Image (cartoon, rainbow, N blue to C red):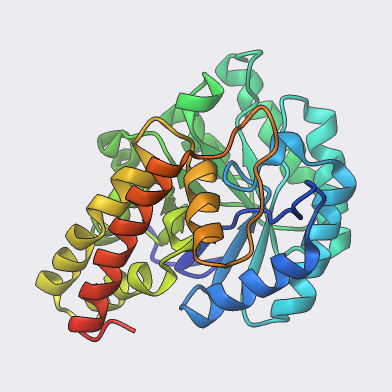
Length: 303
């Protein structure tokens, strides 16, 4: 088990801002990145699930890394999502991200083809061998159809550049088994597990909800680090209504995050098809939950 944090502790799975016509909005991405750092994020994950990686081009992905790198300098880790269903394509994206200035890579399990575990392992080895950058494995079987099984994860941990996991398995037992047997840095990708995973030795989180409330999620782990576990639990629970609306309402987190960011006048823009924007009642519910959380933060001086 390790307590290292190769990409920081408080990471945001950043949305990819688009212009009203659907083009990549690099200025908006830089402004959003600055806001996230001001809110306590020390790492930004680009072109992941929330970043709409399936519908952005290779050139857009590289341009996004360059723009965010320019905006944040060395103040935050920039992790580039490079995972695809095609090993060769993932390798190409990894090399392009390294050239564009990324600090690390996020690679999701190949999807749709549902490779067996030996093929999953070989895929990640080939991606890890492609660059000199550290690699975060993205284990999200609900989307990919394939789990990185604990024994496979343990074997992958032997690779010198496989350093971290974004864990979206909803299997805390399996996660703990790998954490006990490796030095992989585990980041939860499920906002409701921020405190739970951190409390058992996780490195931190890669949060979608942090797009709109970065300071609140940072305050959870700060409270825990200060030894105030009761306050950490209170802060996690306060976030529950917004987390539920954004992540468990039947809409993808990309849709809800962009809807709320747009309603607050922050960089986001439309989602790309096949995703569709949230309707007015959904936006109203998100705004109400956000306002309640903001009121709690003001009352208890979470800033």
